[in-house]
Image 1 (cartoon, rainbow, N blue to C red):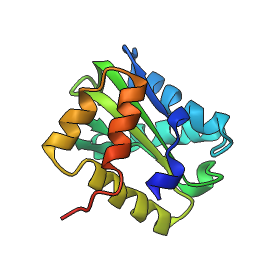
Image 2: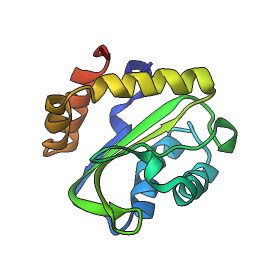
Image 3: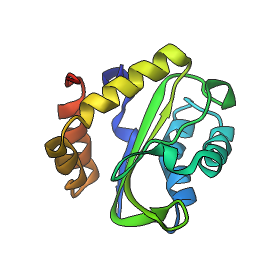
Length: 152
């Protein structure tokens, strides 16, 4: 599924952001531009982060924020943002560099996308390779190389 829904336009590499809210806007914007989510999806993701906080942290420096399908999802989508400089999440307790926003259409898609993201981030070497990307093109290539890896 990730192989079909992740586009080069939805992968971004930037120097820094001021806050997690800015990171969410930047990460979701390509999905809005592609017509995969409504503008309201940004607000829904932000509300979920405010409510559930560190539950979205899936590994050091990595968060996976998302909202429910009825909160603006038009089709399955994923967007990825890597920042060169960490920003802080959860009241400055958690440094983050990689934001993976998923927008699933339903619970089945939600589970499938999670499974494939887990495969992509299966081991420290995969994570390290992704985190060491120095450009958008390199980040996209490294993610593509890892999509479809089996979770053991």
